[in-house]
Length: 129
Image (tube, rainbow, N blue to C red):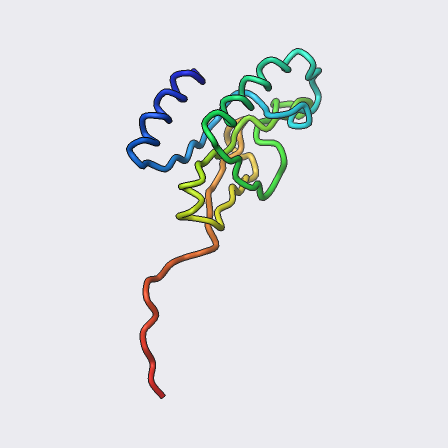
């Protein structure tokens, strides 16, 4: 999957597209993003995911809210599987963007909302006094 996404990224970058990938990547970026499970067996997956992010020049958007986005129903295991990855071109358009993790309600996953505190309302009207 990482190779297919990388191929698509290269093609779209040449066309001038910016990228925002949001979803359940089913892998963490470090052992600190898992709690309640032995993380040693995931090192190869972690390395592959981080290489994909670096190769495609993606940024992991700043996180607001709770640290973990997936919880086992009994609460013994939690991970940060869901995230927002963007290109620098995307951040140039929405520089104040952050990913806000919501409280888990229906799914085992928490919803993520992307918000930007900077809003461009266009040119300011000229007011003469």
